[in-house]
Length: 434
Ligand code: ADP
Image (cartoon, rainbow, N blue to C red; front, side, top):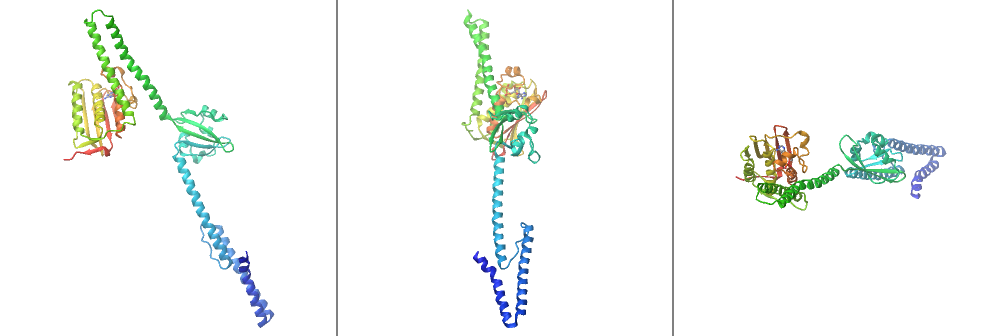
């Protein structure tokens, strides 16, 4: 403060001294004139700086800080300093805000902030997806106008948030959401939504799987048991009946063994603790073996041809690849009537190593294709059984594909044939030298 008064009084003090000097030399009139002129200049000096300050204050972000002299120099430099601090704080807040936005966008759950009247105050992108909201237009809207399912409205109305609500069909597709309400602050609520579609599907599959396994095992067991009892009751064991029963027992137990083998293979493939055994596989050699087995299975009933590009090898598990290729080839043989043709291809296509089996068989109607890799899913149950299928082949192929980052593609037309392809990523192909 004392600095201010010192600086502020310096000019009037010198002006007074100067005027007194004028008085002494030229008399009072000259002194009064000199004093008045000095005061006028002083006033003008302040008005000019005040004007500059007002001009800058009108658009402080765009205009440069004016230059000042005397006391005004201090005023402007203090203001400049304040502006700098303010800009820095704003940049920091903006960065914090952006970080918050990024964090909420990355949340694996949808979040909506509701006010006391259930109007949307804010929502993250995932919540927009879950409830079909658009934060540009729906902020301020009552959420029950936008998501109208009765059970959802009822859940919101219930004062106490209980168990999470499982909500189906919030949008056109089959998304299943788990919804939870959390009260916070003064009568505000957080609506948390989680997409559990995949989880539900998995749970259903797991449940079906157990049921199917018991079902699949029960039939052959009943047959074997029945015949065993018959055999025990029979007087002569070398009769034709006994022979027939024994033959059927043999077939059924063989089928059971096959089923159990496939189940074990599947559970091994599903087990995360069981890492992929990687090696460079000579695919040509492997497919020659698989082809020979295919010919044995076909018994000359089909024309079977291999079209192999032997320059391409694959990094992966030989046993697993053999199982996947053999499964696809055996399906082609089993679902192609006698006289049909089967072609096996192995080549590089757009940088990807591709294995495919094309058959001229019975084909598959489009509605079944998406479900073929589910365990025990069969288009024609009896045909699958007759040909010795377990209903697990394609589930095994899918798992092996997943473990090799490959994609299983199925193209088929009912009555005309199918093509099953495995597309391996470029990083897995190894070009044979020489
Ligand atoms: P399965 O042991 O019954 O053959 P898979 O898992 O190998 O079991 O195949 C599932 C179902 O997909 C089969 O039951 C069959 O209906 C269908 N399918 C598989 N491959 C073919 C094919 N090449 N042509 C026609 N249908 C096929």
